[in-house]
Length: 305
Image (cartoon, one colour):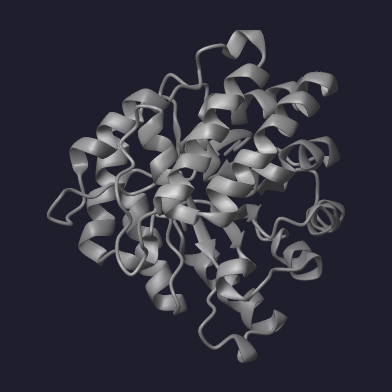
């Protein structure tokens, strides 16, 4: 599957009683369908996946599948601590109708997870998976990073089609790009490195920020891919402070609040995550208000508060 383009790392909205809000998921997806995105990533880190039950995971996956416009590419986060559980979750995502499984590294026994253990894990998942597998390296959460040598080995597996590289390090992305064949798809997980990584050869991005500001994220990617480097640099520069504050500093609560400002249904995070303080909300509101002035003319009005 060609995964070139921008995917939002979808959030999981909750009702006032704390349950997953299917209506809010479908409201958000309806707006995203018209935002120029390639598809959707459900049950990733931004979706509070580790705070959901298996039943809730199914609820989210089904709701996103039902609301997605025809032609949208669907990626499901299916990584778990054990290889067997990861395979089970991957098969379930395939049954629901997802096109790709995004498999994060196991991490709890990280001192034992050397390159051999990780390669063996991913090969067994890929062998058993009825859909293509995408590696997922997010060391800021897991403490485990997939480095270029093991990614190069795993890229040889016919059912492993790419990686979401979320370390935020352009050098690591460059090393991975140099270690894999051209057919292997490298997507980055940080809006702050979208422009340089695309220039280096990354084919797309899976972004938390795209859940709040999808049009701006798409604008950076499209301009870079078309060779319009001046526009790409300009929009990337405007996006940087928002990415730092909303995603890096405020995390999921920040993304959800920024979504609320843009007419999406973000809502509150699930505990133990805490909602934003008033000063954080004010900073995010001011940042988003400034973005409209920096956006290209074709995006005028795309950012609202």
